[in-house]
Length: 340
Image (cartoon, rainbow, N blue to C red):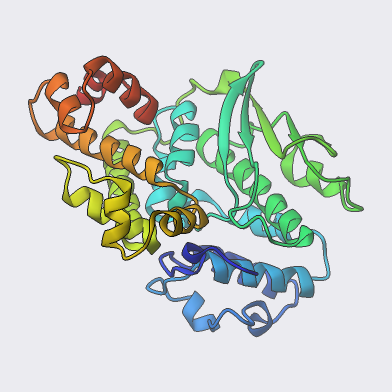
């Protein structure tokens, strides 16, 4: 696999690997076989101080595809991954104020969850829809793609049960591949019908759930967990790959963000090479600029009494109205709503 550079960055706690290894052990696969090629031993996976990478998890899942004798393996792994196993990310989602907040924060902080699948959500035709448009490394094999999608679907169903109760079940699952021989397992583990040969992989819920409070909704704890997730996301952004170097350069000059050609020179590359490397890490210079502006604007709004017009100018907007529209796009809130 020609992995993107960030996929091999060891920045994640080993909870997903632990769940995978535990499940495979119960299915008769020794831990050394599950972890073959990862550079990890069972003691590493059981140590909460260990840092692992998405690439190591892909390797372990590839081992699972090869060694597990039952097609139920990915469903069993997904069922094991309750939100309480996800650290701060999981606790932030558990104490979300409403299920709509849960959906929003699930996407916003997904980078903290050893992400293997890109997740998105939308509200459409009376449904709240989780969408899984692609893996974070689309060059993976068909078998591994299906294993990861099956696991992801069950994880999402389990997470909704964690925050809304066991009666919160999906309406339907859509899959972009032909029905496998074990298609009955989808209904068994998801609690809903599955339809194959669709354009995308999706999990549909009744949109009526979105404004319901979560079972553990708590305003102060939710705010604290979100702040912690923001800090962890910020740390990850500034420490991984070329994109991390670009973030650091831009954050060091907030009053006048440097041009792309200047940043490329600072990281000893030409523009074309830097653009290609950023694309390989799943981002772009424009996205990083947007992210830096959003972070700076949020910080100014929370920690200063500056006017919206002054903040707009500080983060590079000549027009406060354009800034307000951009901030709404970044955060889902207006500057005044964010400040209260």
